[in-house]
Length: 321
Picture 1 (cartoon, rainbow, N blue to C red):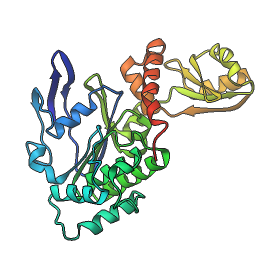
Picture 2: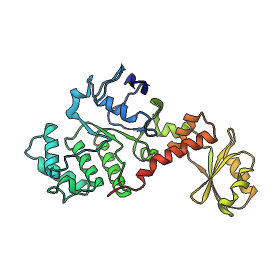
Picture 3: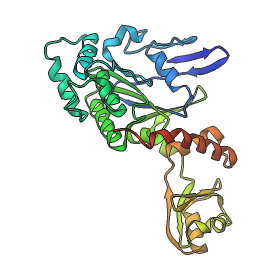
Picture 4: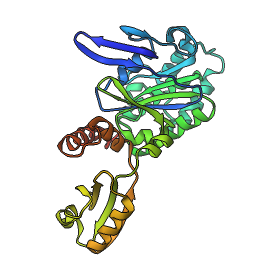
């Protein structure tokens, strides 16, 4: 993608995105809901067309020219609910150019891999939403595509099936497949991808490997568990070098002022009060995103952005099997 821009009336959905994805990589598009991730994916898929800029997919000017080499799981789920699972997947395989001969064993093998060995003759509408989602994932990879594009693939899945899907994505990548997936749940990108593209308000704000991101963004926070528990938050906040203290799951997250050495801060905390635990907190992608968007400033804006990200994650905490 080179200088790609997309608007809908007065709204700018994507602005000036440059992107190059090498073969055999796993790229995660991350950012809050409404950031422009799905619009970017739809342009890659030639479902939408940019107002300006250029893009190519698998060496062609349009994904339409390479459609049989691409597997796509859209954000809006959709299967033929009245069809039986086996018939639906056979139909999707035939649309992607697979021969009918030998297709049933391939379908059965994939149903086994997604822990649905007994649904071949069931109607799609008889399955739970989580099961339907796994069937649709099978439909997107059944034809052994070179490029797999998954838009919010983990949304609605329970933790067990999230783990299963992560494993399947990793297996496909190890076979040389290029994988692009989008998610607003940033820890999912940390678990799966080797390269991250952060999008915020339609603009690319970061494009780097996980390793380089962790190297560039030094830790500026500590996990602290005082003997007195979270009731000690105000006292911890008065220690020199501490910028902000937040209770997190029974302990405290301590954000340090800029220029404060984490090792020295740990010594100050240990000298100020008895502690059960003090350790450096490695920055998460969420932390990195907030730091980029707020320009490294702490306070109300950062807290509000973190709250919005948390609210966007709520629907994914209780998935379907």
